[in-house]
Image 1 (cartoon, rainbow, N blue to C red):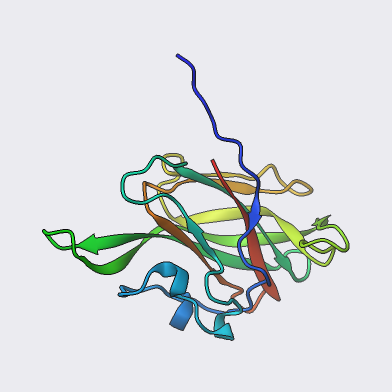
Image 2: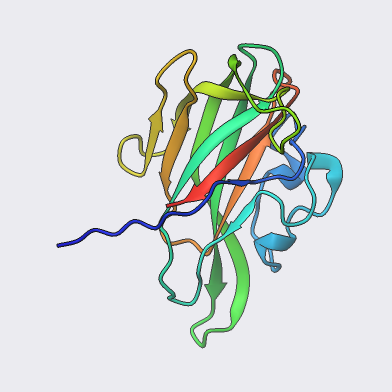
Length: 190
């Protein structure tokens, strides 16, 4: 038996880093009649329409079923932030009429810890003022089953491997918790 893995690039989930200090308002998803690509419609969360939303196939099409997440942000060494990842799916009637979109919390990664020895690169989308995280904690999620955190320690970037469980869209929502200045993430379909 041959096992095939799709090789896809990382994408930055938000064009500009997010400055939201809590999971509230637009940064706390709830049932809606509009697709998740239209959820973030104000800059109050530090994002614009469609940012932080990753499209997977819908309607039974085959697609990757996992994400690798590599969070980063701006702040001092040891500053932290949190990242909630929601799956979004349609709710339909018995006759296939679209009723609404429903979010499900897949994982909450807290204590995403910035490491000043892991800067970005000057004059790129992840500038040298950004630091990758060297650790994070799963506070909600099925550790070792549907989400795995790989955190080698200080001086090495951490990442999370997440089963997206067949959702059509996945949304990343951030909170600096008033610790980090702002935050963002690289995401790679796997």
